[in-house]
Structures are given as structure tokens and as C-alpha cells.
Amino acid sequence: MPQTPSVATTALMFSDAGALPWAEEDWAAALQPPTVLIADDDEGVRELLAFKLRAAGYRTLEADDGRTALALAVNERPQLVLLDVGMPGLDGLGFCYELHSSPQTAGIPVIIISGRGAAADVLLGHMSGAEDYLVKPFSPAELLRRVERLVPLEG
Image (cartoon, rainbow, N blue to C red):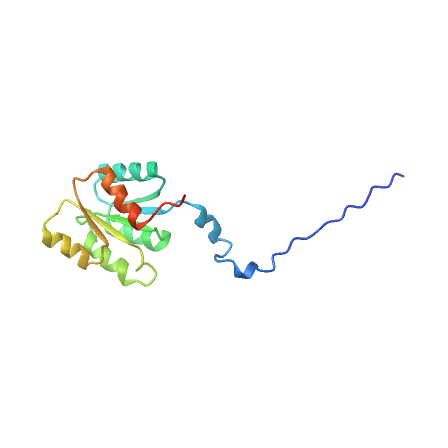
């Protein structure tokens, strides 16, 4: 009977596995592009924003009202929220207040996108917790510049 040579096997061990910066299940999330939640009751605006952001390399989530947007923010933890002020149910200012009231979501930056551009509206947006305020209509280049400032793409 022919003898097969024995093959040595080596087990690989990672002695510093406990020192990894993320839990194993977080590695897949770390490899994905930054996620932007778009909350606007106007479907056309949501689609345009999502198209521009995906073309730039971002992942997008969409909601057509404040309650749905808040649930997505809590469950998905996007890196940024683009938020319309006038939405049914929970409006954008209420959403912003609730988002920043929770320790789990307080660090998610918000850019309010609104047709209301008076100084008082912008001030109220910032007082509710928004990091930036963009008045409609706006250029896609300006939107991407502001998004990139708050959530840069790696690479």
C-alpha cells in the first residue's frame, strides 16, 4: 500500500484579537460607504438627493415623514441626516430635537434642507440642533460640498 506523506497543518492564532478596534460584526459596516438618511415628504426631492449622493459614493436611506426617519436613525445609525422642515407627523425641527435628545443618536449631524430661508428659520434650525442649513433651491455641488464637510468619503 502506498504511503501518503503526512501534511503538517498550522493553526493561525491572533494573540491580539481582543485589541481590535471593532467587534467582528462591525467590520462589514466599517467597509461600507458612509450612510446618509434623507427625510423629505417630497418624493422627487428624495430621489434627486439620493441619486446625487449615491453617484458621489454615499449609501442612502429614505423616509417620507419624521417618525419613519427617526426609527431609521435609531435602527440604522446613519452618519448624516438630510432633513426637510415641513413633514407630516413629526416635523423636521421636532425630529432634530428628538434625535439629539437620545445619547445613541445625539452625535449624528443634521443638515436641514428647506424652502424656508428667512434668518429666523435658519436660526431656529440651528437652535434645534442642526449643524447646517441649506435653502431650496440649491445646487448639487453645494449640497455635496456640505455633506463632504460633515461626512468625508474615505479614499
